[in-house]
Length: 125
Image 1 (tube, rainbow, N blue to C red):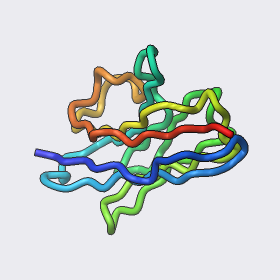
Image 2: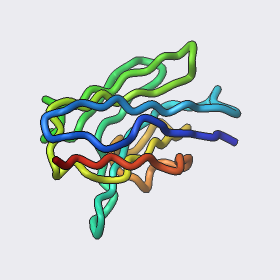
Image 3: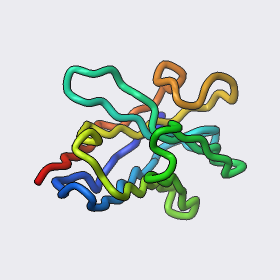
């Protein structure tokens, strides 16, 4: 079983930056993709960014790619999300997820079978 633990969320002013981290443990040897999702109050969970942990290839929600960057540290088994120029509409619970399968869209929540508990990001002045 894979365990995912997110950290790094908090309150930030508009225009500010945050870096989220997700540390994976357990049987991660079969992991193919990891991703960040977010869910705002009253909204559906949406894909933010994803990475193939073997190749390093990445994918982003088109509207976020200019401000968000996904990366990984294989030695630390940690996934990161650098978020810049944050806006109030970025306020949401941010979740880390992973999967072993190689098929399926990278930014669709239902294709991931391991999830963290989430970390809250609030962008407000």
